[in-house]
Length: 220
Image (cartoon, rainbow, N blue to C red; front, side, top):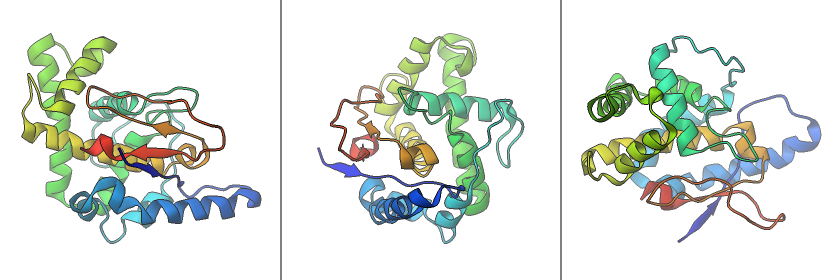
């Protein structure tokens, strides 16, 4: 498995001593985007102003969600929980804690077409509909094990899901990783993230001198 080293950050006010290092990390990250996401994905995600919008995004510190730019409050709550499962909180903050759900809402609004925005709505609706069909409740009300089970099946395109639905979820995961690894935490924390086909896993042991990286395995 090929590993891809990456780190970058949103535009935030940082001490001068860290600015040069983070800018260098950002350039390295941007150069590796095609390797990380694949040619087709990079073309759909990185529209003309996508990088500038991503780097300018300021994460919200408000835990109380409201309607977003394209997602309603309930959809953002669902997306936040999905982010928490894809990149969970460990010794460092996870995707939900750094407002990756808000990042995706903002990115889709500013950089993507209405049909592309609708595809994001569709995958969220798919997850909720599956939860209601098989567990008789909304996804956010499922137990941790049930949530993990449902997303793992969708991630594999097995049992309750097909390969077309898997592809839609894969696109959402790409947005989650794009948002997380362009966050301040993704830029400044020493993370190693190695998702496997059977689920999601964060915080893999590594040497203290090693840089953070994300494996392409998440996007297979």
